[in-house]
Image (cartoon, rainbow, N blue to C red; front, top):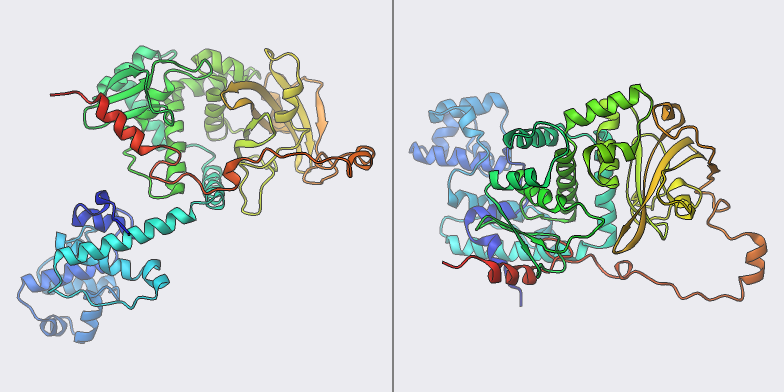
Length: 501
């Protein structure tokens, strides 16, 4: 039995939003046509009378009102004049009424992929159809569409979304001015006067935005924090991971509020929101003006260092490395690449705008692939001194790159965080005098993916390893609004902790 999600169909406007639609500041032919029809009927004009007034055939006016034809701007002005209104009024993106919103949503659904895939013939939305009938049609359409998206949420879809997002980040040099402005506005609101952002100042930010912080011992295991938007509460774990900054979960929860994030409609939305949340968090902990001033001075002295950036702003090494990639190109004119690699060699996160050649799959995705054994991100795992920075030059098929890398720990094991630049930009960095150098011929298999002939000849027919296959390779991505989160557990948690009247 197919059941509809009540949250998606509670009102005609909710149903309208759930169906495929243009952006919030755009107007489409359907909305324009409905607004023209409503204005015509309000003026007491027939279709023929409006057609005569604008010197067009009634069939042309009918096509415009039904959203099957978009009038030119000159014709739109003529129509507006005949109806006693303006072109700007007719071009408003919102539906003229709740009933019109329902009708537009049904029309849009009929023109979408669900009706086409099911082989359903479009029908005319008649005035005699009740609102309940239209809402039922939309509920069924949206549920079928949700099930289709759920089935499509495979690792392949995730890799496509990752590849698309990384391309966008590269095009912007990983710099988002609008998020920088949000961070600066919040810091100013709580009176930040410079220096590291303290935990107390973060708590002041929460209070400023109308939230109180509550530390609990029973936070749902699949979450880092839970926000009760109804009662203005942010729940956080009493036990903090030694490798995680205790300010970050608070700022990440506040970031979603500041950015107006709504429930993600697909995996791409989920990834984008995560990128924006992490970016804004780092922009608050390392404010743009102060960070750029510090890094510019370090560049002039030719001693840029991730460790020193970390220590100056009292953040984690990974946060410092992330923040450097935000500012390096846009504010320091330094092309850069960033990698977070698991001890198994699997790339967890990656970004580049310096022409370094990351391994990728057929879909263009980097995350989940294996990095060359000779790259800094892998050789750092073999270094005995884990307390000193590891620097290395690597000659690759796309040029020579210098990288600095450090090992971090997490519950999933150890991982390396690396920042690198092309050879011609190493002059700005501390560690450029390192003697460590490696050669990578990847993706040529002879580089590191194929066993040496002597070992292969001895063991090729005498070995049978049992692979530890990640279940994510065999199953679809976790379903639900927030992938990987047990919503029932979250709702039960909120119910148990909600303040009682």
